[in-house]
Length: 401
Image 1 (cartoon, rainbow, N blue to C red):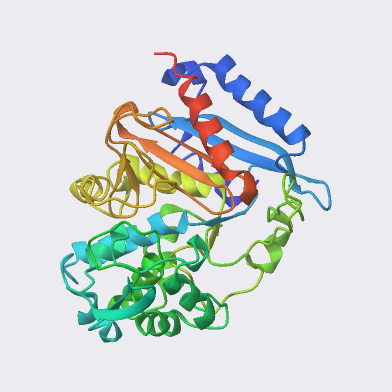
Image 2 (cartoon, helix red, strand yellow):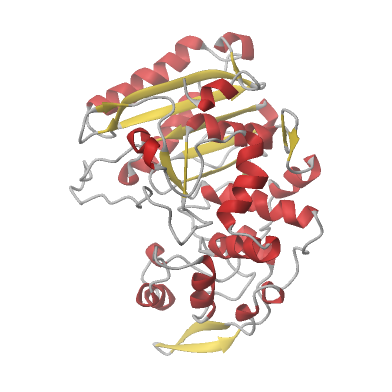
């Protein structure tokens, strides 16, 4: 029995699905569909968990953990969660905000001076010109992805090409190094004008370091992970747990392109606040239950209920962005996409639901109206969008009250 199993008795106890208003037979249908997809060779395996009213109604491991070795998937398998790191780091920042260490409308440059007097790349007559930003990047901009920063893998715009040339993502750097590199490059948009998924949360992680006086990994461990009992969540997998790490197919089953996941078997210098962590289903479930409980799990309170409500409200208003990630019917809060409409989106959900996912296919959502959350962990980058939608469709189809 792993350390995570021992902790399950404290909160998130197991329930018969019908005890919490879910259908056992319909959840079994979810397992059947996932198992069929695994047998078709579309994904190596999955771990999925659904909890309602504070109890786990569905918790299954399917397929294989490591397709190269045929090792079976287990419930305590460790996954690279990529951008599911962002909500954890966003909570860390808001803990410091609750302590009065900054205001959301503070200029980022107040704490990271290198981000003062940023330039913006503007296309004119087929050329790129640099103009002074109309206003400073604020900390709210970092949390809601309106900073003007970008991700180099999201396109081929001039600024994204500059990111590639500057090697803004490399393991052999510190969080401080990356922040300096990003600050020397132009922004893709004027701050506050467009939702652009970006390295904003990497910079937010650096801000946590500056304000706390410790490394991001140490802060998260001491203030969030250890208090919540998230025993397998970190920026790397220690040697004794390498045998629990999930792997992807070596080549994508649809395109035959090679699949390369981030190296997590050694402690990195760069602790990416935007995408560097690993976790397990039960660990992340404890984090999600804390959010659903309004900032508290068991005897541990990380944030106030009002702060959680504020983080999971829409902070974009009329600001728009990339429709492939900021899907119709959704806005964005402080670290999460937030559902604004009961309809419009191509997936079911309640108004007020919030979610995010990771590059390799991990996904979660929290539905406060229904007092439940769900998460699925896979390592299949090319198939992630399909299985995120499939999983959400089938979980909502299991409601029985």
